Amino acid sequence: MGIEQRRATISVAEGMRPLVDALVASDANVDIAFWDGSTITRGTPVGTLNLRSPRAIQHITWAPRGLGVARAYVSGDIDVTGDTIAVVEQLRSSSPQQRNLSRVLPGIIRALRPLGLPRGRPEVPDIEFRPARLGVHTPWRDAAAISHHYDVSNDFYAIVLGPSMTYSCAYFASPGMDLADAQTAKHELICAKLGLGDRPGMRLLDVGCGWGSMAIHAAAEHGAHVVGITISKEQAQRARERVAAAGQADRVEIRLQDYRDINGERFDAISSIGMSEHVGRANLTRYFTLLRQSLAPHGRLLNHAISSVGGSRLPKNGFMYRYVFPDGELIDLGNTIHAMQDAGFEVRDVQSLREHYLQTLRHWVANLEHNWDDAVGLVGAERARTWRLYMAASAVGFSDAGINLHQVLGVVNASDGSSAMPAVRPA
Image (cartoon, rainbow, N blue to C red):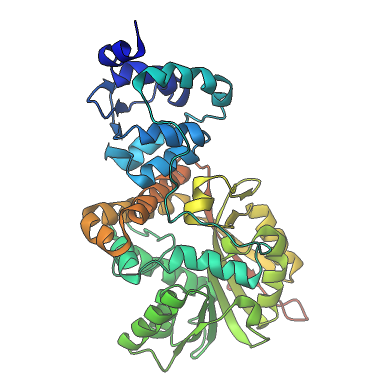
């Protein structure tokens, strides 16, 4: 039988089965549908992975270690129907590295030829990050990486994050709490740990201040005088607008400033929320040392950051690095504690909020999906799809404990060893 005859008699699902078997675990409860209408069914499906175009196979075969699947999804050649997080969770165990895809891929490609799939390298989505040849975590490289992630559209982030405009793990302190209240509870938890209510007019430095939510809360609820710093131009602009709208312009200053340029100003407390992931392990002790130098005796630092056991630097050929967090690095909790101690802090409290981040991400994914057309109108389909995939994958990571979120509280003791810490942990 000639190739043309085989094309007429074989469905895409039949031809694709060897590749599917290599990529997707047999017990993954996900249907896989193809552009000709044929389907491979696995178990009781939680959703469907839709391969809408032969270009999806090009992406997968040219970048088989997960990046190709992500590129196909970002490009719209692969889509998901059903519960996005549940589908990603089912597919997570089907790692090409574990299945030795590189060994069997040449044979699979030969088997796919009767389908008439296009050859050659597919076009890469325009939003993929291509770093300049600068040293990692130099001020210039950090500015480019931060801009890639944060300077996309303030209005887009408002859709995803909701009215709190807080891009970090919320704290669902009571059952049934909505996202906005949970973010307020998180800010209050941090303020309590930092002791901002101990006396009026305390000075707080909020490093990586985002859109100003923590700064506004500390000023409005505790009378703190706050300096918030960020290297995202769009964040700084919106944060200043929000500070003014909240009537806190006399208490809150938002600066477009790198943490390396603090220059010895004095503060009573420092919050670092979702910031140290952008610093890198090699620079972590220096980071905490610079912050330590800005604190008076009895000053406290609260570091709120995603962590992973053993630490993990995002691989440059991976989806998260290329599309989401260039130069991002998740640091082992022990290394964070060690770096804080090396910088001169006494670590007094460690708290995991892993399950809270899973719940936060479920809210963010739902916000994006419920306002999909508006989101696409603001940032384009490729970026909206990128955020949907990365947040769903992150939710799975927090669900199975592959990653965690820890708050670590450190204090600068006085020369006599006193800490001025309360005897009872803040609730």
